[in-house]
Amino acid sequence: MQSTDEFDVIIVGAGISGLYMLYRMRRLGLSVRVIEAGGGLGGTWYWNRYPGARCDTDTLEYSYSFDEDLQQEWEWPERYPTQPEILKYLNHVADRFELRRDIKFDTRVEAAHYDEAGRQWRIATDDGAEMAARFLVMATGSISAPNIPAIDGMDSFRGPIHHTARWPHEGVDLSGKRVGVIGTGSSAVQAIPVIAEQAAQLTVFQRSPQWSVPAHNRPSDPEMVAEIKADYAGFRARNRLESGAQLSHIPANDFSALDLSEDERQRVLEARWQLGGFPFFGAFNDITVNPDSNKVTADFVRGKIGEIVEDPDLVDMLTPEYTIHCKRPVLDSGYFETYNRSNVLLVDINAAPIQAITPDGIRTTDADYDLDLIVLATGFDAMTGALLRIDIRGRDGLPLSDAWASGPVNYLGLQVSGFPNLFTITGPGSPSVLTNMMVAIEQHVEWVTDCIAFMVENGHASIEATEEAQEAWVAHVNEVADATLWVSCQNWYQGHNIPGKPKVFMPLPGFPPYVEKCEEVVANGYEGFILA
Ligand code: N01
Image (cartoon, rainbow, N blue to C red):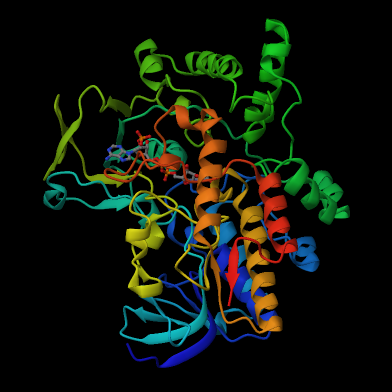
């Protein structure tokens, strides 16, 4: 491979992490190139344009904290930002800090090979270009590689099939259409109420019901905004460590369900239900580790589904049996209510699996459903998919796919042994998807920036995780995860949604101890890494 362009740093992806990484690298005075497959920036918020797409973390927390003027000046209209609002914000950030000039859009990285002699990463892109850089930062996102299920007959369907994460930019006119949605995860739960209002008929093909709680979106409260902005830095600091970078700034209550009487439990749960959003899952401090506390919470939501949905058969179909909060929690705006509509049909594809997509619609083992349009709300090959879809090869040509054949292994979720100078932002083995992603991204970008600055200042050519540190880290992640209820059901945290994917719990629960460990590693002279 011949190098044409050389940089200090190549960053793959111009989403939230890629943009911030670029900003930081420039401030170190390094030459940087960001390579982005999309035609615009924003990563997940560039691609996910399905009806109803919005973030489920409060806007005042789901935003960058690195620039005081930026966070003071930006105004969010609602409690949860819509996809277009987030994209507008990220475009503003790119303009404000003049980031665009270092981003190459519409270009997909196909290969990244480490050249040991030249101590460089050599990158090949789908336009035939070649580039090289000393440092390679994979800002490719944790939930970015769409999962397109292999269903027989997919090509035969007469109408369009759209994955939620590849929704057409020009929008889709659903009026008068018979729409089928496969999947009932976060994306589907947001899309279904909106599609039901627009389409003539909606048929939902459900493999797993959802423990969903109301989001209670509302316009931003000016008083609350002013209060937070009066000490934004303090607000961020409290969210980051005291609240554990959770998806809400309202901390979990400091007691278990088991400490309370039945009346008190119901009162606490009802108050949290009324708050809406992620605070609900903090009604008790042990819902992710204590099956009894978890069951109290699940029973409460079971009761709510029963109150909202009119048809008792539908209540049964829509009520999960697995532990609540085991799959990634879902927030909704009128999701369960949607099943009371006369133009909505729920199909249980566990009872009658999908056999094929036909020219006219979807065939299950039970029936044929005639459709004009199919929505695949089937999620992502999470945490490893975006990395493994690129031909990444480390020292001695070792493919990352071989190194990770039994599941992802790395140190701190940041570096893989055998892949010098390659960093993964919010990689598997780090808290990432179990936190407010903004916080996890900023922490990783800042750690990597400090590391690269240290290397440049001290004349180190490369940094690489040791095999011993990596082994110990993987064992640690498994030990922490095994003590939680996240391993008690089928979820994408463990790769259950992707046929053939190794079943390994990928994120690391516990942000504050993780940050402490990252800081300790640095204080001990990058313990667990080889600096050459
Ligand atoms: O994907 P999912 P998503 N046949 O994997 C089903 C974040 N997010 O795009 O549960 C039939 O959650 C699958 O069934 P099962 C958030 O972190 C955030 O909705 O595997 N069905 C499931 O019902 C979220 O968790 C926001 O049994 C199939 C659904 O498809 C993550 O992204 C919004 C199937 C996929 O659900 C992913 O969410 C959206 C098959 N072959 C997303 N394969 C907010 O901030 C899969 N399914 C609000």
